[in-house]
Length: 250
Image (cartoon, rainbow, N blue to C red; front, side):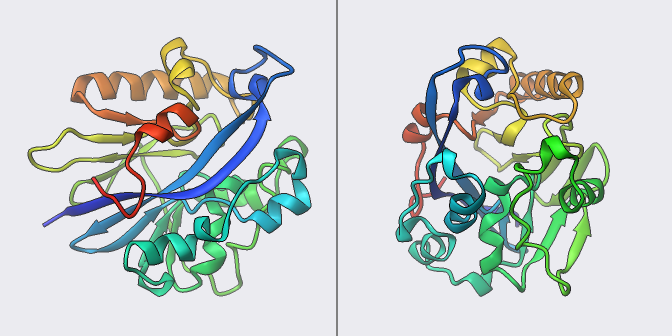
């Protein structure tokens, strides 16, 4: 019982200035970064950690991020490559609700969304400095089914643990997957973006509370060391190219 397979679904890539990856460091250097989601085949159901971005939304609101997403990189196509339809996804767990983490949910109207309650509130009524980050609202519908992520550590299902790691946003969560006989897999989401920022303990230029963000980064680094976990970075192109991509699996 527990986690059977883990697949990384390619959602394409975007461009931001390097100073937004490394807060206020190395400005004037546009950098392309990957976006992906995590598909978890579990004995209790089919779960998705984040859902990537929607190209149309980015072209409308953030065209300067130069979205590169083919039809094969949309969520329905990525699921199809793994032998699933959109209706097979039982639940989406959102690390947070920035547009590049919830855009694919327009294709999953029947899936339950697990997210922090304050995260949803801040997304729907954002502060001015966060409005662009929360530009995708299509995931939210009058009939949306929500379940709240509450607590510092949540045992979501056998082998799936969610860790409260605020700072990047008000209620950000990271993902820990544990399976017998295998190294744990730690998906830190946007606690930090790249291998360089992980090592130097740097946060992105997009954040709600930078002090909390650094504290969360140090917490997950300590956990990764203690558990000897494989750390999966969200927005590092070199790291992404070294990972297995769907339909291959871990």
